[in-house]
Image (cartoon, rainbow, N blue to C red; front, side, top):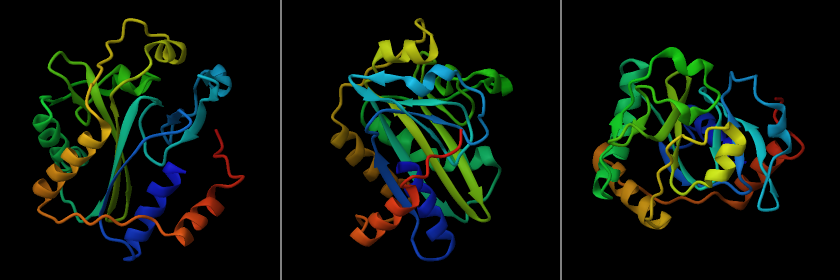
Length: 228
């Protein structure tokens, strides 16, 4: 459903029916999202559970590697008209994340990994120039993009309070450093939203989906499990 909403928003935006959008969301039940072009993954991922719930396996409309969505917060930006290279656009959009987390006490920097990430199934196993890392180099926010014409969907996962045991079950990386952020999600969202309004020089207006829009999205997702 979350991926359907993001995709629907960029479609509506390109049709001139929806303004640029910033949203934040969490995942229930937990899920592993695969990058659009990622077709190889361990077979056992299809049968994972966590605290009695299935770990869903879904495909993102954006690229990159697999992300475990449990104990994380996802942001999504839908916009258009941004100029520059793909990396420059990442940096333009990510500026509000840098400013917002600075206000929350975390100084973030861009990653430096090269193309080696392609052989890494775990999105958080390496940090490219489109990702944000902590001072010790630990990846904190992994982002990915979809471009359609002049429109851009960029969304990314902020790893807050992940279950280390589940991470090890999924990726088998016991030594991978995992931060734990003891800040309420509501505080994080409010701070990042204020940073976005300041950074992009806009006034944010809260606009929940209508029941008709929810029904449209349910119709698009019911019985339509994305092909793996």
